[in-house]
Length: 256
Image (cartoon, rainbow, N blue to C red; front, side):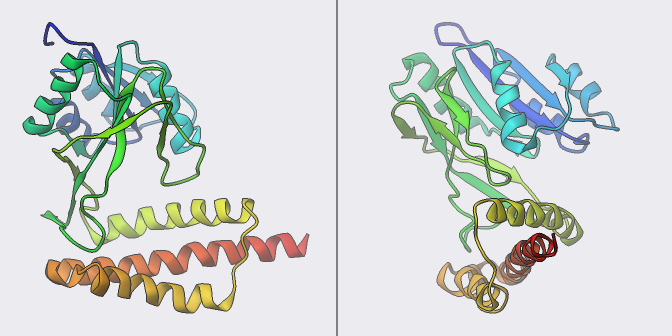
């Protein structure tokens, strides 16, 4: 803890994250409070988190946005930093955050870029960098919007931008991507269906092709070598999967 600055709470949600949670919390031991909200881990996630002095909770799953809001509501310090278990705060970002805390702003929330790693390498292209998202905000001023997937924070007030990036160690294998893709595609399909969107032939034919071309050519994923090629292909599969999930829901609704 650093004196002469506002207090900082770190909020993390978890489910079977024993592989990641130690590295995440080790990067924020300088924070004033760590809150970990778990949704039913069967591994050592909560034991490891408790070893870092975190306040730990176990609750029924409320969805990504709902569970993150629950963690934020349990934070007691002036500012809140929200992290995923596979994210790390490097020292340059720590120093920049502490500058914000010492100055008490001036903005009410701050976006941060993310260095996303795929199969052990930082992906610089394909739309994966800087991948800015709001993660730091005054307590009581930020809330995750109720989306099924790809949830984001809405800040009541001005939003600034931090220069230094967060490290995001995502997708350690292709199987890891495919496993999560199935879940995210189903959630995205359900969200689109609830919003009244329809799935047509173009959505399951041309949209996946466009996803590949956008990432690999327009966003220069080709410069990331075979990882860039693989990612563009996998995201094309994800696009197809989420529209297929939408189509499936439409057919289910039609049969009722």
